[in-house]
Length: 192
Image (cartoon, rainbow, N blue to C red):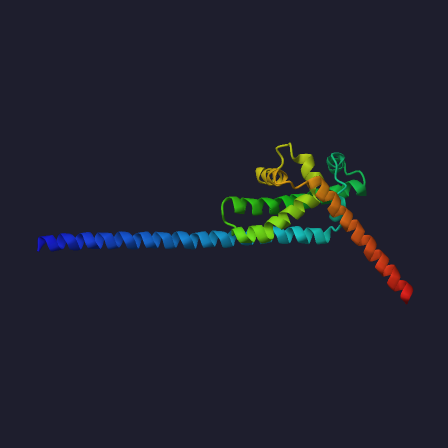
């Protein structure tokens, strides 16, 4: 009888250990899902702020290709409206950087699904870095830019992505599209 009680105790201990392990795994999985959802909301919140700011200050889109090292001086001087607009652009690029950091950090700590990152976030991050590359280039060698963004830029360059050329082409295609739209508008006006 004593042997049966020993086996029963061993059996109960093993079952208890298995149940504890399953509960720990379930708890870990639920916690990880909660972290992923929280990261997703955080990224969406930063993105929404960035888009809202861009909507309120559309001039930032035309300034992205005009940034140069003298733009920093204008930010701190603010002697004219032209210089004040650089403050608006700098605020925008800080929001962009916040979005980029949230996405790249989420990927680094594996809280972003690989498919979502490759299919949605990476192309968007590439676009935003390329669009604002003159700014990022001006701070690339300084400690002001996050390691996440520096690594992203370095990795894409290693893959053959030429930010300077892509930026010029992007700005050129924007200018071309604007010219084509203006031409279409003039043609429509002539028809009436």
